[in-house]
Image (cartoon, rainbow, N blue to C red; front, side, top):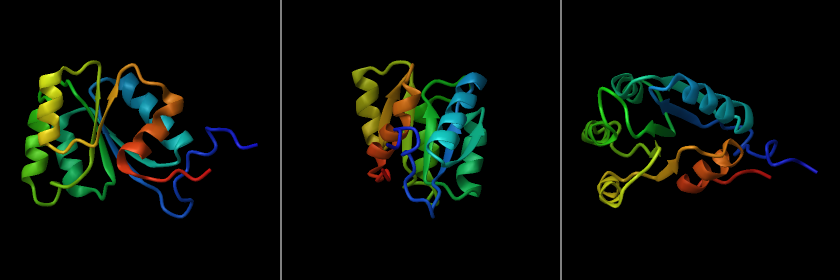
Length: 140
């Protein structure tokens, strides 16, 4: 029987490309390991929102996983800039945050956020969460 970890592959011929933006090095390493080793997706990591905006315009991406709180730019400012660029305005974004209040949830809806993952997250269910937010099918 195939384990849940081995089954987190969407399509063996097409790898999804994920940009992870987080200022915490440990979180970046954990996300990269899970998304590459378990999900079998290609992962690009950056430590700042400014770097993320550059990568979003220079790389072909399927989704961005964005830390909700970073020192130089918060998620709403990042999303404002991302959505104002015609080349990135429809790029899916999943927010990764320690907490979220109702007012923020309403604001994020305005920016077409695909989903929210609350920290601490379960690495073993991360593939399924991301796939569910984006309507991706996971091969079993």
